[in-house]
Every structure is written in C-alpha cells, then in structure tokens.
Image (cartoon, rainbow, N blue to C red; front, top):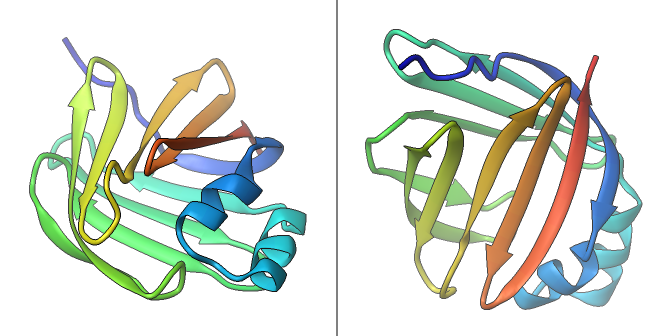
Length: 137
C-alpha cells in the first residue's frame, strides 16, 4: 500500500500547550513567550520513491531545516530549537510519520499526519504534549 505524499506548504492555524512543551525543553520564559506568539509555516518536500524528506519550518524569528530519509537514524542538531543533539529516526506508523529523538530528554519526538488539507503535528517530551495544526496553502 502506498504512503501519503506530505509535500506542500502549510501555514499554522492552531496551537495548544506550546508553553508547557517549551518549558519541558528548558527554554527560558522570555524565549517561550516569543515562540508562542509565532505563526510558523512548513515547506515539505517528500520523495515517495527514495523516502527522502525535507521539512523547513519558517518563522519571522528563526528558521529550522530538517533533512532525513524515512527509516534511517541520523544525528540531528537541534541547536536552533534548544541547543541539543539527538539521534533521530523518522519512520512510518501506518500513514503517520513518527519521530523518535534519543538524547538528554526522555520521551522526545513528534508525530505528523494528514487529514484532508490539514497537517497535524504532535510534539512530545518528558510526558508533555503540544499540538499544532497547519492548513495547506
């Protein structure tokens, strides 16, 4: 069975529990407040044949680029996010993309899934979950 194509540009329309999530990542109060005011967009390029994926998260404050091959572990530099390095694997869980980030923080990772023209992102760390919803541009 073929997997969904995540390619596209998506703009955030909803966000919940981000301040608690960022606090669990040890971000300081001022930076958490700034990040919670941002309205990021995501540009995703997904090659279904090779499993290669690029996710660009763009804001007026800071941008973050992530490139990987689905199913292959890689070293992820989360310097722009919280200054940490993780061993990261993104794999399929049904039609969802499941990311596990092994490093200093327990239970860190995220899940992306598509519902119609919406891209959902659930981020987890140390028992705290935040959610963002993006709409295809």
